[in-house]
Length: 191
Image 1 (tube, rainbow, N blue to C red):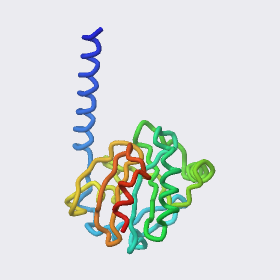
Image 2 (cartoon, rainbow, N blue to C red; image 1 turned 90 degrees about the horizontal axis):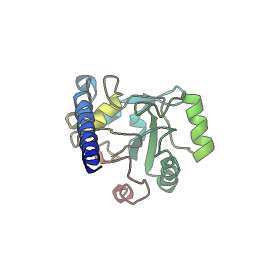
Image 3 (cartoon, rainbow, N blue to C red; image 1 turned 135 degrees about the horizontal axis):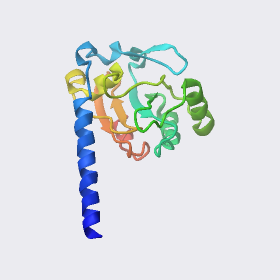
């Protein structure tokens, strides 16, 4: 029994390390085509309209890759609470992504309905994007590449990974999927 447990643990560790190596190797393929200025990047919102990141100048921006069928999905409620509390100086943008075990399989209309009906989400949502790999959205290329953002390097390892950007468009911090939006870590940056 002990040998089986040890082998299982070793296999799990090897799988995690292999996943991280794969993630890093396939992380960013379009750095040279991504602007170094956050405010030069745009995204398409959940209703199909292009949104310039420059419209958020002067506010903190929290970018979160989201999914409707994830164990972290209840964070929508806490993100909404954080947004309601600080919306005078904070914008939260949810970026639906289906890259983690297919946990966001629906289209934009159903995603918007789900978020509104189940969690009362009023913060902006984008159309579905890729947050890693060859199809990585330019915003996530900027968020995960120190070469572009000038401050930090990170991998999006699961749904509800959070990136915080300053009102001047500078990369401030990253928070794992497990990080509770209301635990004070994000709010300590909001001056």
